Structures are given as structure tokens and as C-alpha cells.
Image (cartoon, rainbow, N blue to C red; front, side):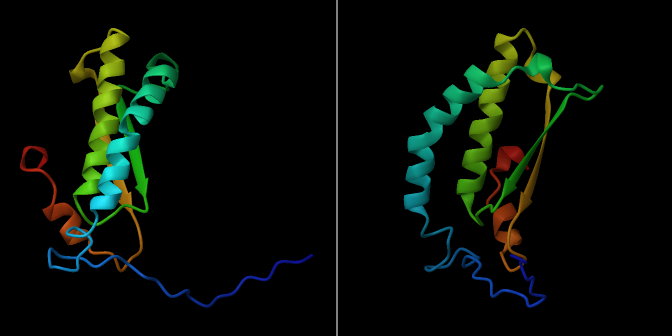
Length: 127
């Protein structure tokens, strides 16, 4: 059966940006709770399965993270920070130091999402 592609754009439903009463940043507690609940599972799997010795290393030791479908509030940074902290822990356990890794994070979502709100919610110590 032949599949047909449509050149029509699909309607998007981005999250409400900003910090207002109805914004995603103010109404995403359920998502934050889910991230909290799954944090230990993700941490356990990274520690068990990630072998930094088998990753291709260039001179900069950069680890790139892509958050596809990122939110527009602080939950995104919470999740990414969990990943970074766990990879750093794994790095230490394999005899590397915190200084040996650099992280680059790429955020991607609907073009209508409010990325300004995302970056305004970046913790001050990470700016």
C-alpha cells in the first residue's frame, strides 16, 4: 500500500508561555512529580549501562544532550540536570574527574513554544 504525504502543515498546540496564571511554568506540577518519581530509575540505568570508555572521545570530551519536546518551564532543566549529575557521578566512578566532561544541551520543540520563558527559568548558577 502506498503511503501519501501531505504538504499541509499540521495545527500545533504549544504550551502557554510566560509566567502567568495559566502558563505551563505555573501549571506543570504533575509533570514535575513524574520527573521526581522517575529520577532514580533514570539514574540507576545510566550508572548501570553507560560506559564512558566506549564512547568516541574527541579532545574536548563533549557529551551532547538533545531534549526533543522540551517544556517551557523549569522541569526541563530539572531533568537535564539529573542526567548531567548522574553522568558526572559515573565519570568519577570510572576514574575521570568532573573537569574532564563538557555538556552541550540542545532544546527542540514546536516553533510556537516560548523559548524565552525556558531560558529565563534557567537557574542563576547555570547562566
